[in-house]
Image (cartoon, rainbow, N blue to C red; front, side, top):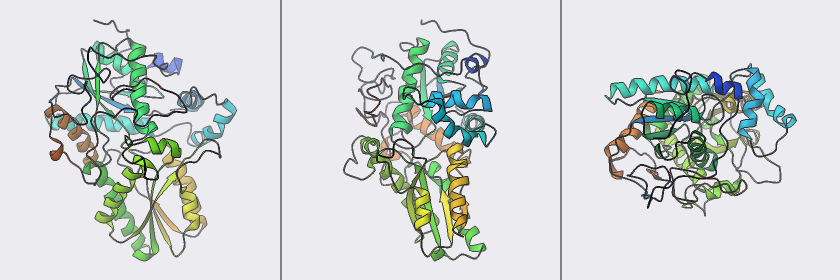
Length: 419
């Protein structure tokens, strides 16, 4: 059996930042390789997925769940080390990072994302208990404590061998899917657990009704609030917002199935969800899919329109409902880019504005995550899986090259067919 390092009690298990990792303030180094079992096509995978089926109907007796977050700083001293983790390998100087750091510093250097994940962790465990599923849940972040490597090391110490991973991201793209798979490979190599632990992942859950329902509820409530404030339906514009990504990355998202569609699978998935939300919550209401939080050089094309440009271009509207469609929970890009910049832009144009909630710990969303685990434990047929859009249910095993980022070069990843 592979030996694992000794960790402080509860490290990676209870969601408290590990003192040892906090002192180091760095995420695991990039993996140099992945482990492929004899004859396997998918590295570090369970027997049901190692040959790479699009969907597997083979039941898998998982030992535990790995909840995987992005991570965020929890104090002013954390901000720069956290941003260095996020941008590692890109050569961005600290002076440039400080341009982003002031967003965090305005809120005391604290991102709400870790506390959101602590709440989700508790809600997920409670829902598992209600469903009679005796599965421990480990929580590890990609960019801040508790890190993925400490969560995996703790799981191995506890006797876990096969995990089902839940990324806190619903859509297909490099940053919202493949980068999680790369960071799991990094953590396995850093802990020496490549041959010990098997990790599958739940499918992209953008089309699961439990993920979509909180947005339906939010739009309904937002419309009702706007009407109470004196704005009729023709006066209202719904802006479904998600993180912008480079157009080249977008074209590679979604396993190449939407290569001919502007924005690739990433945009197509968001658009499908937005269409369902409007049909269920406010049929006939005017809406747009917009983007936020772009970075990178101005010469590099990113998905547009930016939400602030869309607000500036609005005509004949008196009210705006902002829906954070691309996000599972509140974090800095919701608090700053939407609640601060976008709302200020709308108010500056004399528009009534509200931002609807993210799924967070909405009961339907928590039940959806448990359902995603159950469908893999039981080997549920695809036709019986929960799905509310024309796209989906999505793949259990990522397709070759799906969502790769050619600018960063090939990086080892698990839970998908190579490369």
